Image 1 (cartoon, rainbow, N blue to C red):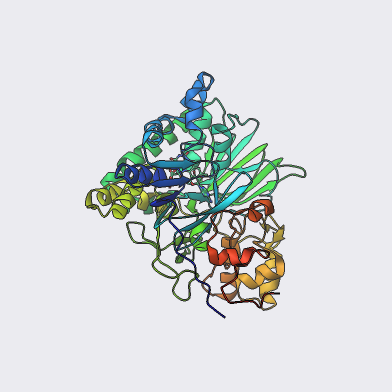
Image 2: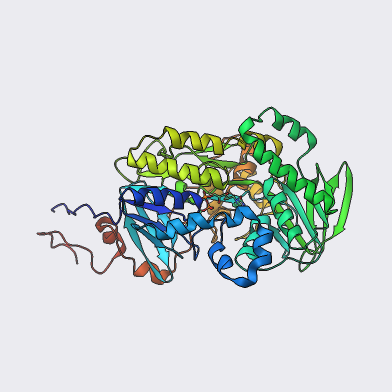
Length: 491
Ligand SMILES: Cc1cc2nc3c(=O)[nH]c(=O)nc-3n(C[C@H](O)[C@H](O)[C@H](O)COP(=O)(O)OP(=O)(O)OC[C@H]3O[C@@H](n4cnc5c(N)ncnc54)[C@H](O)[C@@H]3O)c2cc1C
């Protein structure tokens, strides 16, 4: 039987960028300006990423003056970057395009509407941003419990204004930012319940560098405005729980050892943000577990060069992926822009000392923020009755039962319980399962095996995949399997 031989598939672009947030846009602009053909894929309908979500549409509408004023100057500041991104020749921007597979050889699986396919490039910049740290606590799946990022999305993209008795709970700058945005919209939260304490701020001072002072001043300004507006604030809260039957009706927590119960229509939680690692994991890139952050982080060089997990890989040859922005290290929009430019310089082989210095400058406040706002809501492990996997409705108790019955790996537990098998593919539950497993077995958490598609892919789209590499086409197409010359034993 003769071996089948296929040509190397042609590249569709010089660089594929995943994500049109600050990091992806700035990388694409510099690469295209240097003459590279750049394809940018993003699941959102317009460029901007998390921070500048729906900025173009909101800026163009004369009715949104109050919303723009509430979202503040940091939101409107994204206009220039988006305009440059739109105006730079050589960028093939594809909105509403979800990436559901990434391979280390530069192959990217995409879905747009009901069409799907593969693209290839010798370089891929993964700039898919961050996600809010998942925080399972009693009642967190009740309607009326949302994350701060989800509320911002409804404000920016849906132009909705939250109402009723609102409690904000958790920690991190985004809680203050959101509270200040609500204040500007004329919405007064009933309480800001913070998990961080004064001693965390004192620990943060040891990390404070002069370049971080503007960020600290901004934070103090938010605090002062919230206090002036008479919004109550408690620190050091623990044991948060949402209560209600059909939806959240009340919230309870411990403050200085006392139980505090409050009626509540909307409970907004936030416990900091962590890199989105689903695509990095899918590509077989090395991740490291950070206990203090209760999450996995990708292992990269400072200019974003990703490492492959040691051992057998699905792809031969070098890793063609660089990770940029919040998908690599949480740093905010300025740091994401600086890092996108740094990655572009590395790909172009240009001198990168200026871009490296800009990244360091933009990341200067990070040490302080990490120490001053440590993981709070996610710190205690969930009680047995608390749901961990929302998609499949699996509780912490069910997971512990399996571990006590002898399961020692996340994959085993996934196979038995279906935890992590739902539409989110473990994005919301994997870290909690890892922590429960770590606590029960004292083993360092090893993530689920990642298999594409990491995002839902309709069967119709799968059937019509374009751009398949020939080896994969062989497996996918049962009817038209390629037949090598001289091979007649196929009936
Ligand atoms: C929920 C949330 C809200 C935030 N709000 C603010 C804020 O108001 N102010 C602030 O200063 N900072 C905010 N941040 C921090 C913010 O992420 C950074 O400041 C900055 O936007 C990071 O830029 P980035 O380009 O690295 O990532 P992002 O801005 O997150 O951009 C990543 C882009 O990748 C796309 N993407 C992700 N996965 C896929 C996929 N599989 N397929 C296709 N596209 C994909 C996303 O649609 C997004 O457009 C927020 C973070 C989060 C997680």
